[in-house]
Amino acid sequence: MNFRKLGLSALLACGLMATLATVGHAQMLKDIAKAGPNENIGPMPHEVPGDPTKMNIKQDKSTNIWREEREPSGRPAGPMDVQRYQLQMEPVGIQTFFKLPVALTPEDLKAGEIDIAIFGAPTGALPHSAGNMWAPAEVRTTRDYGGYGDPKFPLSWVEYETLLAPFTILNAVDYGDAGLNAYNQAETLKEIRRMTRDIASVGAIPFIVGGDHSVPNGTFRGIVDVYGKNNVAFVHFDVHLDRDSGMGKFGAYYHSGSFMNRAVSEGMVEGKHVIQYGMATPVFGPEEWDQVAAEGGKVYHIHEIRRDGVEETFDKIYNDLKDIDLVYVSFDIDTFDMSYAPGTGSSSPIGSHPEDLFPMLRQFAATKTIVGVDFVEFNPFYDNKGQQTARLVRRTMFQFLTGIAMKKAGMEPDYIHPRVSGEP
Image (cartoon, rainbow, N blue to C red; front, side, top):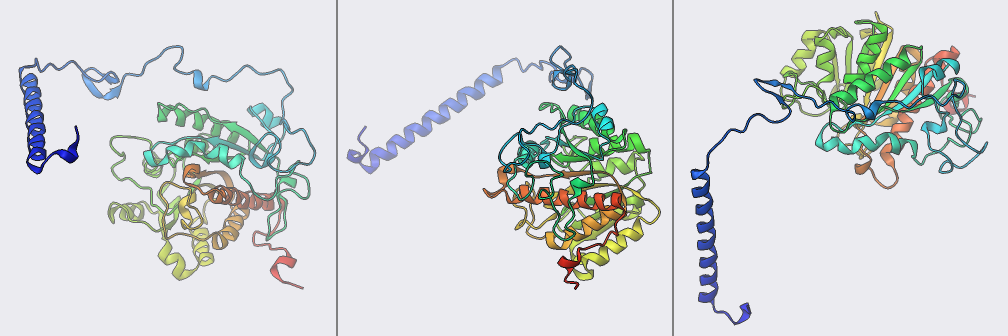
């Protein structure tokens, strides 16, 4: 049809006919639906008949294949250095965290007398965090300074303010990734819990690279499995409070707002030993903060941190934790202002600055006894081409690693190399 040759009345007529056709079709569907049997064909397949609060989980050969480990290769227990060359540019070779050797079993950790085992927890429990499951792979392949060849090589990873190479002090490995059940977040968290427990049970410190912030639902439980209830403090760095007083979003148990409430309510940690740092975004209401206060916990908002100073705020945290030494740290990369960390699903234009926080993280790790750390909510799909956020994740990890190395070496927690500090 040539619409240019049609007049206005013809066009209106065409529109009227289309409208009538649409109305007629809609009426026809209404008539069919009205005449239908209106059957209730039963509950959804995942529901247990008569009890919609329970799930009917399919069990067959494929159910657990994602977490069935391969048979041991017969090699001697211990870390494996999978690189070919003594010295190489960072993009060359098999990518591991910090170019570290690989370990796959608790026996490897014991044989290597491992201090730090880094593993990936590739989860993405919420729509905005679906890309987080790619974070461990991206952090392994991040372009950055250091990581050339053997991690103990003097020109490898050196922390700037201390001029300390932590991998010359710490025995560290890449422990691979926890298995991912892409269809069942709860089962994935169970596997993450098992891996955390396996590492902690041999005296090593698990460093977990998430994944979304549901990860501590598994990791902290694994830590408490080893160290016991109420024996480990929980320090949470985040721009969000991550509290859900309703104990569930849309009925979900495990998500980025459930880990803290469940840890306290289930008696894994005393409320007074929960410290939350860096909050700068709205919550569902002031009752969220009231709940923390009622439990005895502390929330340090970005407003008061800026007012009182970062160092002074950490002095308060040390006082809060004066009667407990063991600490688990959960670090959300959106703690940092989005100008520093664009690669996260819930970024905030107001947040912490790396140059302020890095020295205090290092000092904290050199002062307290860190038993586990997770780094979560890095989403590579939101990062820029320069891997800005990925590099920030690794540098944040490196501050904790340096602090732990300083503690192992018996160094003063506030040590700065004289040449860097400007001393003669």
